[in-house]
Structures are given as C-alpha cells and as structure tokens.
Image (cartoon, rainbow, N blue to C red; front, side):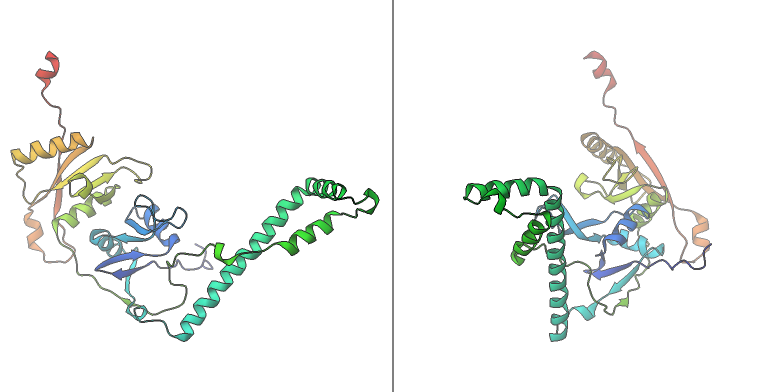
Length: 298
C-alpha cells in the first residue's frame, strides 16, 4: 500500500428537513456507483432549464438511504445552521469576486475558442476579405492582408456580453464553513431492515410509492436497468388472500415480480440485547400466471 497516497476525502451529507442532501457531483457519483444508493435529484437542470422530468443536484436521500450511508460509514451527516443567516458585507464581496472571476474565465475561454476556429479557417477568411475589398474599389496591390493581421483584428473586435454568460446554479457552498455532525438514532423498523437486507444482497433499492409498493428493486443502476421486483413489507408471516390478489395483479400491471418481505421471530434474537442484533428477513415471491384453463380454451 502506498503510504504517500492522500487520504480519501470524506463525504458529507447536509442535514435538511430531517434527511440528507448531497450537493457535490463527485460525492454523488461515488455514492451512486460505488455504494449503490440512488437518492432523488431535486435541483434544476441548468442545461435544459426547469423541467419536471430532468433534474440536477442536489440529491435528496430518503430516511432509509441516509441511515444506510451513515450506518455503513460511507458518509457523515452534517448540520450547517451557520449558513442560515443572511450574508454579511464581506461574504457578499467574496461571492461577487468569485462570480466576476468565473465570468472573466468564460470570456477568456470564448475568445480563445473563437481565435482557434478563425485560425482553422484563416484561408477562407482572407479570401473573403480580399474579395470584399476589391469590390469596394481597392486595388489588388494595395491590399495588405496577412493571417496575423486578420487574427489580431478579430481578437480586438471580439466582445462578450455578460448577460449571455453561463452562471453556475448555486449548489455546493463555495467557501469554507462550519458544520455539526448529526447522530441519527438507530432505525429498527422492519422496512429499514428489509431495505438494508436487499441492499446487502447487491440490489439497487428505491422507494416504491410510484408503483404502489414499499420498495422497488433493480438488478443494476436504474439508469441502465428496468426494475425487476416490487417489494411489499408484511407485518406478519401470514399473507391474506386479498393481498395475494391485489399485489399479484399490481405486479402484472407494472410487469414486475412481486416479493413479500417479512421477519422471522428467532429466539436467539431475544437472548441478546446488543444494538447490532438484526431480525432475519425472509421473502415470498409471487408469480401471477392467471387462469391456465381459460388460456388453453382461447
């Protein structure tokens, strides 16, 4: 192991409205690709403008996702109450300087790119200028055009309207600030235990509200895979006929496999009062095939 390697930068989630938010794009991509926690992008996409279908950072993690990230040591939950006050004059000045710096960088980049494109097409530009000068009555021998002269003229005439500048949508706070680590109580609810168990089995797990279930399970990243299962969390081991029918038909409607998840009472669980004692989660898979007899007749 390389002793000179820099220590890995910790991931901090901002504690807002009782859950965690991620404002850093690198942190979010690591959480999603390495830790298999998706969250929900709730910010405005600065490329396409506001749209209900395409969002950007920050990413909001629900209570189960936040609990898992903290419990597994993947991230720290931080309260940033110090940022809730109105900015003072010095903070406004620093932000304005940062804004001007980014706009100036865009201006420099635009001019550099424009000159690069002009340099590629310099022969066409020279030919066009000569033709225009000849039409205006200037004699051929009086025309003094070189690539250097034309490029210098283009550079001098380039203008940058700040109203057309691309502005960063405020996301991660640009300056150093203080925060307080938030300690979450252990979530011993059955739903969280099911969420955790499915995650430990290598699945991507998201909220199932849109499908009328507790969770949706994916075999891979939801950007590349369709959901394979809807998960229904049961308070007991008995599955009612009504649930079998309604959830089975629901699974057929959304083209998913239905899973009933429940905990199994184990006497060994009650012999120890250790905080890391977890219930055993069991699953019942339901495949809805309909009426085979009717299918044969038709």
